Image (cartoon, rainbow, N blue to C red; front, side, top):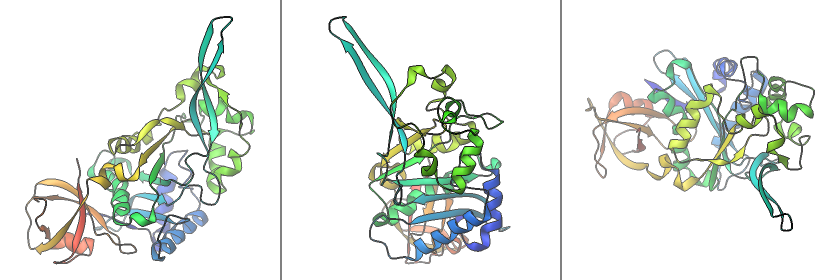
Length: 339
């Protein structure tokens, strides 16, 4: 059985292994033990704090194989993007250039640097081992964050965003970066992402062009890359779009990947999740697959279980599942259907 739980300092070596496996562009997973240790410590402090509104907190979770203790995935949440510095993105806009005398009326696609999304909660750090792609466990480590948010709404904003890694090749070159960012920094896309993961994206963003960029003036390869998804990020994109996230309005300032946005209350796994009382039994019946979480903080746990459950009725949990979630008869869990 695989279980999602908050990361602990004892997980650091395994977390760094996962970070090293993640694709270029996942700057929230730097292959650096110091930064990852800080990430885990910040998560532990956030979980231990009393919180009544979204602020500087961040939460970092891992997916553990309970039979071996090995970590096979991770994900995180930033309670308020840009809390201490602006969260930059490019906004897709249309400018109109018109001349009544010449009877010309042209609409031009432009990119405008903005920090519209500052203050939204941000889903980050998603990665699973390749053999789990397309499995229910990948859904768990991604969507389990949403069950955590549903159980603790006071800790998060009214909107949620997700940055999806954009196109780059096997050498780490990005057509969008080469057409835009490279002109302002004498470094490759991979080097820029590495630098921003170790320092701050804002450090580089503030040196990017702040005037509108006319998209037709960009090379064809850069235009075609805008809003496109790196193959290794397709899983995250697919999960989030099924959750109701929208894709059209913003792109990443480095690689042009899509930035997804949704109202928190409208996200599927939040809106459709339910609380159910638990009754622990020796053996349960299979049925529909559900994501389950215990609603805790430092002791948060989530997993995937096949259940024969009728809404409004007690949830019959096998003893080993109840133990993994840390719940007992008379307690409750939050659940949502896997599909």
